Length: 235
Image (spheres, rainbow, N blue to C red):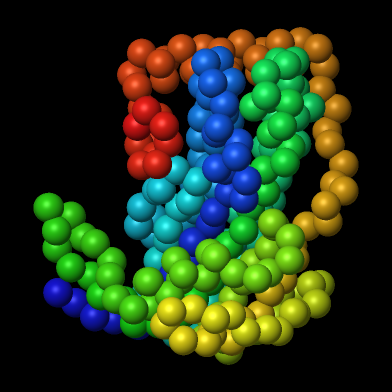
């Protein structure tokens, strides 16, 4: 069992629970949309962050404390997560021709991120490595907070002290109450709510619809997502 200072990043899709409360075709499309959006985040993930686990509507990353500049690099990567998520969501909305509940409501999904620095404990379980410790628990607790809005980056003071403010975004200082005690936080809002959507041709829309239908059929046959999202229905 190893203990080391490090960074924890949790990205979570806001509105996930309500989004997957569909049935028949809609739930298959909902799962595929969630998978596509989360995979857009995973596609731009890289050092200094390492993927720890996937949890349906969330991904947990960690990074070792590499000294000065590590926190800033992590914050920059988190911004790329938001860019990738919002870009793909806009494409999916623009290409959509399906009228099921999931496809018509996908533009309501947004991304939030929790960034924290603390002591991480790596322990061996079931042939793999499991991260543990109070700071991991704290980061998860902060997913339930009093922040206004559903799209934001929440830094704990421990992270913010190392990374500083995000360029072009006013910091919102506050404090969150958790069962581990009060936590000073700084919140940033990375995207305006009224962002323009790209234009899509009818041929592109039909291709996108066929792609989701095809992937949905595969999901029904396999009963799980391609990346093993732990909390998705049927996984």
